[in-house]
Length: 177
Image (cartoon, rainbow, N blue to C red; front, side):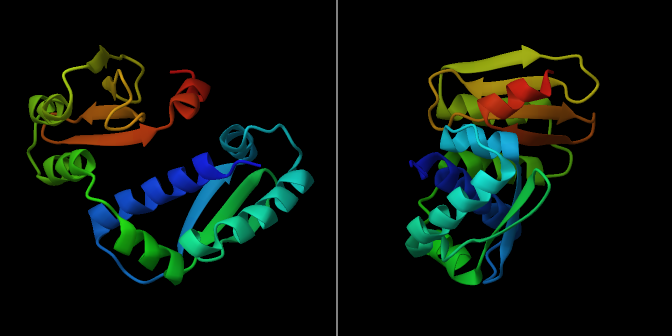
């Protein structure tokens, strides 16, 4: 079983949280639907089978994530990374310059769409930008070559402030925007 994609996504998410809010030695809870877990782990299993797989995941990632506690309500799973895992991620976190720059930009009230776009363009000359009129967000932006990351950024331009949400390519496709 290859746990690397799920482990990396969890670490990326916690890194993003720590960049936004700062590091605290506390439990971090991440929630995943069964469909996302199946995709990350490249399986197609039931809730009961996923519970067993996640018990193995807990053991295999004990050194990096500190012994993830798993619970679920139906098809919604909570993966709770204990303080030791959050600390490990913080200590091992390599400076993700792009994400740090993006968070710094959107943290400034009064930022503009052009300022946010320039952050992407600073980190790659192969940036996909798509104007979207779906009522949820205004732009889809991502790095065409998957570097420095492969996430899909959904940008909302509120006129006086710009925010973002980021998704894996597969989760973005699942939303059917």
